[in-house]
Length: 228
Image 1 (cartoon, helix red, strand yellow):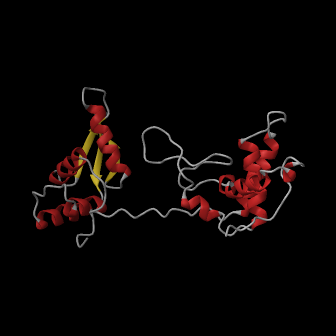
Image 2 (spheres, helix red, strand yellow):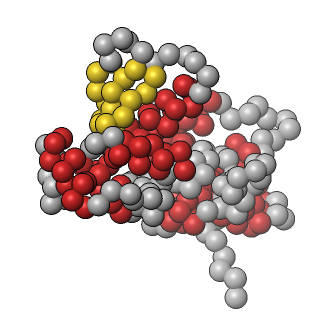
Image 3 (cartoon, helix red, strand yellow):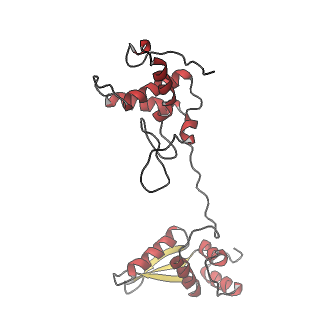
């Protein structure tokens, strides 16, 4: 047996007396989730969820993460914000659209009443788990064979830009440490970090040509902790 939702006044004072009043109340009740921001697709107030699978944008069923944010709402809250979303999405032809100030007020009230968006904890990079391209893996090998040292051109000759992109990506991942510009000004020095040496030892894309003793010797020269 379908439960009867408690009556409440809608935007139209005569709405409760219409034959479809129960349907409209039910629709507003289930539109309440659209009043809060979706943690998955970031859809805002009054906007339906969209697919996050890539390609062309397409509407999708309300994501579970969005529904979970209003799981603790009472029927009164669901009707209040669900009706506000219904009014925002389907304005009457003979009535003005919902004012921006009212939209912002409802959106702020809904966010305050909903559960906060969970904070995504970033996974700590590991030597085996860090994502590397073939070019990045080759650059790590080149640096290791050079005693933990490498460099990137500061000029604009053919191929320099691609090489700098590879070096910068490794720097941003904590594998290389940026040093000073060379004396002639045409290169910048980089050195393998402790994490970078661990990547060289453990990553599946790296072709190790150095023995453990050679690696330890190079690390000792740089002042890295050899036991790592």
